[in-house]
Length: 249
Image (cartoon, rainbow, N blue to C red; front, side, top):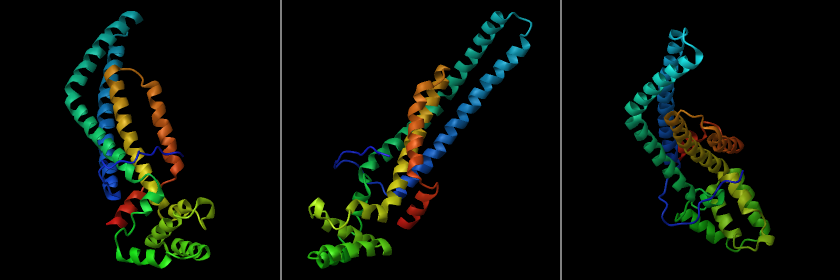
């Protein structure tokens, strides 16, 4: 899956994995509340429609349709008006969460970007950088295998930094592959969470608009289906972000 990357910038605020996990939790809660409210409102409209259809069964179909449509339309208008403030507030909260995680994507563009933050400014990372500065290809490749085996993120970060200075065709290992083996699961979990928050916010807005207009959302749901496909392709477990956030803390 090709994930859209945010352009480099100095203005995107930092969001940790825990921050993204918390934003996802709030988005799920708001999304469930919104879907439940819309379901209840639409249920009232449908119940009223069935009640009128049964009550007016002695009228001609055209007459019954006209009376039912007028009555149901009036009920829908009342429900829309009375629920508007609550629905708008929830949609605004969802949009704020969507913008928050979308901004955070700039800090999670790739496993390499994420790995390079590991141990930054730390004493051990500085020592490792000095120790491998003049290492040859065989030693660098051996250390990369050790980093993967030991899940040593600092060593992996130093190796990626070192190998990135070597011409592409002469590198003893792929920095991207090493980064993926070390932090790839975290990268995919974060991407899946961002996609899910965006999906929840967009779905709520589409369904709210459908309730307002009384029309089927139709093609508007295509984007939701495509995003759901992208999330499925990441192959991330539902509790993956919880586990990573616990490790972060």
